[in-house]
Image (cartoon, rainbow, N blue to C red; front, side, top):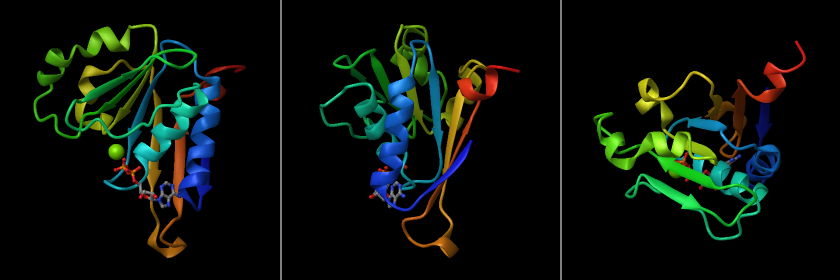
Amino acid sequence: MTIETNSPEETEAFARKLGEQAVPGQIFTLNGDLGVGKTIFAKGFAAGLGITEPVSSPTFTIVQEYREGRIPLYHFDVYRIEDPEEMEEVGLDEYLFGGGVCLIEWADRIRELLPDDLIRVTIRKNPDRGFDYRQITVEGGPDENSGN
Ligand code: ADP
Ligand code: MG
């Protein structure tokens, strides 16, 4: 699925719907350049789960846990990870199989540590389409895997 947005609010609203439909065990990877809207997406997604506390990029802590919503949200930002082994210290597997939903900003950096069953979200800008334009692609979601 590919959609286009023209404001942070539209991106949040789209992510909110995915958050509303999320089920335990899902792993969403969020890829795209710095400032493209990964954290904006995470904010909307969290709202869809019923989380009201503020969501920001957990760049320094690597992972932030939100337990207030319908199911736990584990929000990662692995931008600063240089060696995949650092993720062992973070306890990645306990989150991946922890009964909540994982949302992983910069997931390509730890790709070899992640299972194959991912919902891959990629956000792209296109300068020709204006400053606030974003193209958001979602691959591997339930829509694609069911009913075939
Ligand atoms: P990232 O986490 O990918 O580094 P952020 O989500 O922190 O990026 O920042 C995205 C920035 O882009 C915000 O300042 C936001 O207001 C801006 N923005 C402009 N248009 C959009 C859009 N259509 N969708 C998401 N963010 C947008
Ligand atoms: Mg971010």
